[in-house]
Length: 143
Image (cartoon, rainbow, N blue to C red; front, side):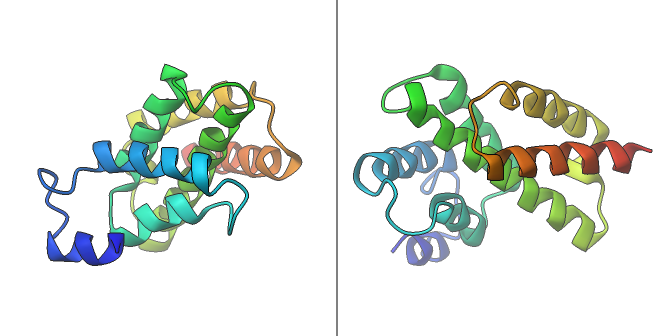
């Protein structure tokens, strides 16, 4: 239904606002769909719909920083995992399209700082590995 609505509304930010929809769907997913289906179905949905990677990350990042229910305690890690996943997909997209990593050096630096903050989160081994790989790839792309 979300995909259909996105295409009908042509991703108009006034009627199909990612800053409203992402928190709503993330909340729904953690309250009613936690551990049901693929772990990345929420970010995959937003990427598939066509929301810009930067918008997805910044919206999830705001939820993560604000520490608002239901994203408190261990549930906050879901947001960290989603950010790492979206950043990884964004990085792959930049390489695939041969564009500047994360759009600009400033964005890449901000994302590198965010990854440093995410390193302090209690993440699983899969997320730790993805985080380390992404950090290494960003550093390499500056070299």
